[in-house]
Length: 265
Image (tube, rainbow, N blue to C red; front, side, top):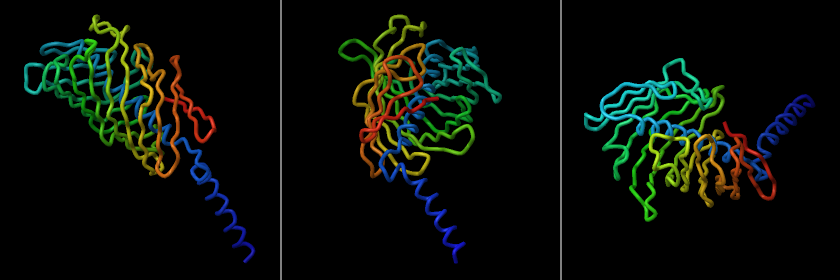
């Protein structure tokens, strides 16, 4: 009887420890997963954006270690970006493998054009991304800046060690605020990012987010800058996730007065 009591006591301690963060309303799991989802979906879009702006007519080429096949003579237009099965490390230091297959309803730069992106056996730094992303050219705003809409539904992201996976959705608006006059020079491009996202984190709980302060996505930086994101986990209080003004792979999270740091891949 005494031995059974000890075993039960140990089990209760383990269960209590596992639930502590969420029970105390200090969990940052949703912030971590949202940060990863936002980073990688924007990365996939950047790849397609660069490929579309660098190619025209029927051709095969390569960009940043990926093989490119682009055909604007068929309807819908077709773009295939192939990093191979073994992967390759691009100039930005990211290792990618697999394919992004796109269909385009019209020329990429044409207002109203819709690009459907299918991720096929696609990996970024050994994170596995599965699903489809839609990118729409909204045309010019009142300031004569190009605007775009990025939508992802149930993108599944699995960690390199296969121990964690989560689902991520987004409805994001991008405004091209700098570099538009130098179309094929990507080094001066800057986009302002607003919108919302949602998902089911790797522990099975849902969350929603809203970008309350617009972020910037600049050439040469892999992560958002300046953004403030309100994260609302299932049945918990809202968190405030703040991206740095400088280019760093982390964001700070405020949870009920407690400060944490989320590392971004």
